[in-house]
Length: 301
Length: 226
Figure 1 (tube, rainbow over the protein chains, first blue to last red):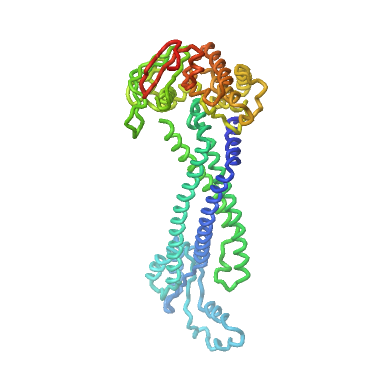
Figure 2: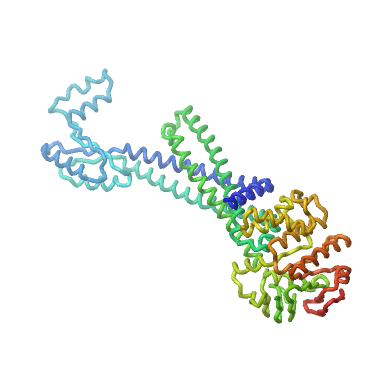
């Protein structure tokens, strides 16, 4: 415990001693994380929108008028037994008419008065919800094969575009995260390399008094992790401010189509804070580890 | 104790020998001066003992153990039995005298009570008692070298390697440092000291190894500089 405290104290003193270098290193982590954060915010929002759309995605199964009530309930059972269907509601001809009527205001209601019970042209239907947008087309094909089903309707083109867009954004985010990870790793690696070089005397003395390699490496790894975490915290705070501002702006300009669909602040920030802290810790520790290991390898022959 | 068995050293990317066919035996408790012009191979000689690298040819034995065959962790144990003093002191500027000396014991995970006791004792030997809380940058060259010597002997090494320890000091201070090293030697520590200082070598009447162009040109007991 005493030794760990010594390591932490040494790491703290080193950061203080190399303020400029440490600041540069933190700044590069912050810059990388902010760009990454913006991409993640977009990705999280797109998948949030997709989820929203998915959970509201309705499929309407219209039934032929000439089938018996028995067949109608049979089709209902088939649909209910499909594991991808989460909700099902039966809409009778009367209900369909009522719903249709609700689209008109009272002055236009007379338009529909001519339709009696027997003259109602609207078909019976089942309104169903599917668990995942990916399963829509499979569910569609299955239901279309049932006898007595006139048509199945859902926003086919809209859904496929949305899914493609979501996949594209996810791929772009992955690429950006990979590139920026390499950049941050390289920056931390170089910063620690310079601090190791600045403290080559300390390292040399440690080696000559017989310190183990891990004893030499640990303070540098702690230092790198601390730099990474400070960078992550700064990036989270900046993104937090930016995101709050953006939500505010979008609410003001409600003409924007996304205004009502932005993922809630807490959901986004919780994910980003967790990712960033972990990311800062890992990148900082790994960068330092590689750097100091290389230095020791180059000097211990 | 230390045996150079036909050792030659050629650095990577170099054609010239830094050391060539060196056969030397240094016994326990000896005080040996290593003299010669710059580039003669003195530092290579010392760094081979410290196992900074292996010889290109030949074998080096420490207490009859072939040093070339040691694994990484065994090298760390070997170094714990040695102390090193450099011309430029190599003290940690951000640490006090006490911390600089204690550092060498902390690395070996000694407990703080033992460290405190031992550091006081060693600082007394090198004549720095009462200066525990001073920082190296506030001290004279001679005092700094004493701190470095205290750090080198704190773990009771069998061998003390000194690379030009008086190189940055005036003659009077050098004499004081030499007296201190001589005392440490009489307590049983083997000392190998590379130096350019003719006056020091001539006044202390020890074994002198003369290196020139990587070759041992002389090995005299109670010898003089050249």
